[in-house]
Length: 332
Ligand SMILES: Nc1ncnc2c1ncn2[C@@H]1O[C@H](COP(=O)(O)OP(=O)(O)OP(=O)(O)O)[C@@H](O)[C@H]1O
Picture 1 (tube, rainbow, N blue to C red):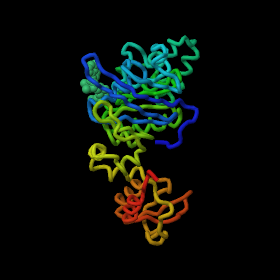
Picture 2 (picture 1 turned 45 degrees about the vertical axis):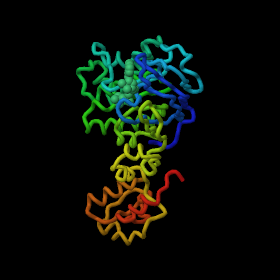
Picture 3 (picture 1 turned 30 degrees about the vertical axis):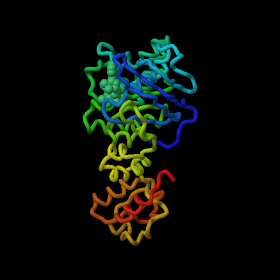
Picture 4 (picture 1 turned 180 degrees about the vertical axis):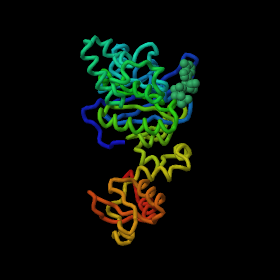
């Protein structure tokens, strides 16, 4: 998502993590995975492959049967689970807000448990509601049933961030929201994450969401077996095996457009696009191939003029987009 990690943020290490449920179901069979501090790591895989079980072992809503989880080098299996959960923000589908408490009271839940004084809780609540785009004057006194699904989800984020947690865990946080609001909430989450840079593990089974939000994606198969752990660009360009290839499916070519930057060094002279004043659409050099191609489709023009700081630096045709995709080796 944002490729610069936050060096101050806590890394998470899963070390041969294992969960066998009492009925003998092996949900997670020795998963090892390193999550960089400040990044968003997505766990994705088919239904029942163990994603939620992995996530809940990080905050010990589920006790591991074996292995370790290290948060910033400390083994969480040795921490007091109640204290641990106060330092780990947790956002789930349908949010789980307390229905008989106002938005303000919901957001202040963990700070209250931590014994913050009232003024500090109020200031923090206002700050967070602003951050998630809900004006405190308008929303703080409402009850959850007086909000839309998307607004409830935002309150859920605010609550998860309230006591400045070390880590954020998110389990299908957007799946209960309709597709249009989902896109908007995902955009807001990106903005929010850039502001707070918390180490985040996000569970989803939506590949598009994984590609949009993840700095890294872990593709899991049954028993949380790790099939590939890579950046979105790498995953889409080079699926590690047949399982991943099938999982990312036929859309991967299209999706790669959205994770591949415009090739600054592979541009044609501006004149070859007919020039910006010849009606060619323009895109900034920081855009992706998807945005460039989208501009071509939207205008019916076969090329775009690429701008750097507002000045044209070259042109890109539809054929160039194809060449650029073929040339990219994200693993290089
Ligand atoms: N309490 C439980 N007792 C026994 N088996 C369980 C329990 N909870 C989950 N399981 C099983 O463990 C496996 C992993 O479940 P988990 O919920 O972690 O998967 P998931 O990948 O998050 O699935 P989904 O995408 O459908 O939410 C599944 O086979 C599930 O049936």
